Length: 375
Image 1: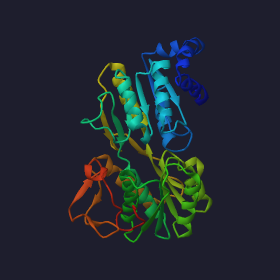
Image 2: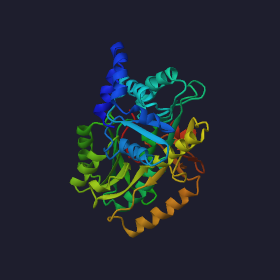
Image 3: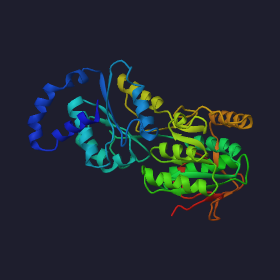
Image 4: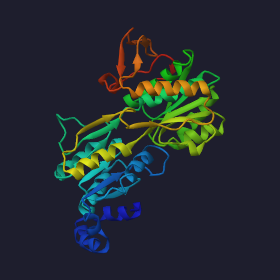
């Protein structure tokens, strides 16, 4: 289903005249075929499905459902975090008969998804992120997310073995808890190899802004970083810019190795196929859908890109050993003694936090050794 087609259908809902047009649209397009499925599931992306990043990871998860018997998939890409996403959700419900919708972008939740939850109480909505709260949000809403900080820790392990300058670079969008956790995890993984390694972070202020991402990547390399990673919607610009400057890359969201096959070390990826299959299995079975879904590497919600050709034997051995420990469950990235980069104690000797803990979901600091600020 193309974005152009979906856009025209959203336009049908803008005015009362669209109501009359709806009948014509129903006759013109194969809506009945979509409704003939046992269930129709909608996916909405804020950017293109082939962005080598956040949206592609979700689109790959959606694609894994296309062979599931009785399930019809509808998708729309490049939908902004505005009233446009409400129109898309309404279109999927009214024109395609969607009974479960995944609005995948952070800004879709409030007020847009919540407005649709109230308008369509018989439709289930599940949002990617941690915003759903049982005390204030409707029960036909919910959230799902993965603990990917451990993936960035593994990125850091490989980066720590690879760096010659002992300076790593991190291009980040905004200083929210998940991003701060990823920055901290990346450096702590590297410091498990060499405690003298530092990491400089530059915040662009936007989830997707190619010019600033390129500028930040170049600035980090100019200041000595020889391994770079990121947390932005599409790592494509960061990967290609860094590789073009001769730096090594650790990926995020999806597998970016095709963009820089010789410089790509590994990457922390989402495995949304696992999560979406769980929801669809419950939907087909007629079971209530969970409102709060979380998981990490051991649960299959997160995976690592294959190690690249530049990864040495020592890095491979530590990577494999650390991954094996993580797969057992209970692995702690944040553990004491540990201070923030402003000198505050964040974990005392013997104190440790696993990524499922609320302490990490409300993280508001960068660890000692990170050059940068949350301000």
